[in-house]
Image (cartoon, rainbow, N blue to C red; front, side):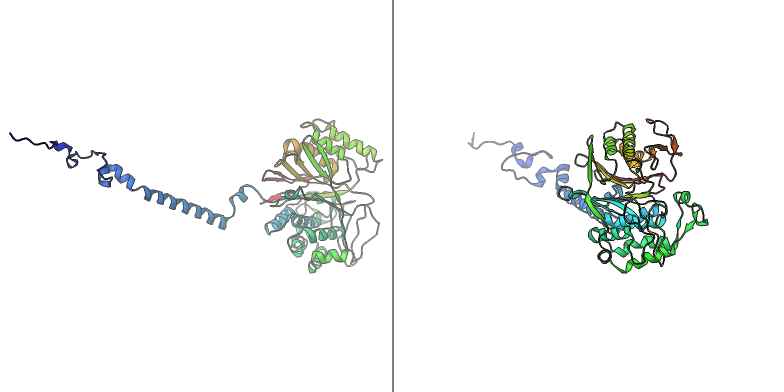
Length: 462
């Protein structure tokens, strides 16, 4: 019998004899696609193609989003407004935001709105009005303090002004524009020119003061061709040229800071600051302390406060977080007549007017901030007490009490609104139009603006 020393191998030991689908993992077996076999091989083989397809889809989505942003604007700009103007006339608020949309800064918007108000609200302001302006570049707050500019007020008395004499509001705004403006001076004059030439609907506030002409009916179209021609004449020069010719028209000073309960208010130098301090610290809904401070200030003024003046206020925030609060006013309604060939009637107050711009901020980064154009100190103090607890618009529309002009602190209510719940019923009724408070509120990057219904205006945002 023949025997062999070679080992006998079963046929099943051969790699070629393995059943289909069985993979033998040995070092001498190459790792090939054919050895992997089945559906797993088909899925793994498509992996790189799947990754490339996902990357292509992501690239297409990003490209589409960029094109949408380029052609249709920034999504954030639609959701979070980047500029706002609040005033007592819708046309003037729009004139301000149009200036911002054209690339202007907060001062440009305030100037366009103020000149517009001089046309549509001649009973409360004019080109020769006195004024108080707060300007603050909030992003530069560490290095640049807020600017307070004031003009007009008590001064020499004159029966009229010559044709070459500068109206005070225009002179002050031209000087400020030469320093802080971005748009051409002539561009900012144009909205006021168009309204004076083409006409504007008469407001209820204007009707309540002037009832002697057919043009004074609410909704009637009022035109002022002489004012339009005068404003057009100012387009021939730049603001820098006018400021050099007219000289400095505004007095500059440091704003007065007032603190209370985690809030800070920046205010003009004149006025009852204690009432603002009480407003910031007052419990929610309690205005008694505010009213008491206002009355105390009126009693201490020997009958000279509050003055029997009128005013109109506006508030502006631009896309760079620059704040402007501006209030202009007259000693009496229609205190400055329209310009004529001989000049115009000059408004000559014998004392400081009741002008109350303010900027109110919380004492921490990204806290709530209010830019306020108030048409009286009494309205500002009571609105501030409501704003710090409720915000706009509720804080602006809440019922308020007025102080009778030269009344030694006598209170007057608003006939259209009930008296504040915390206070006693006032013995007098205030004379309309009531003092309005126009506000732009900023909380983080979000803007909310509101024009007081007492002024009949409308805020504008973009």
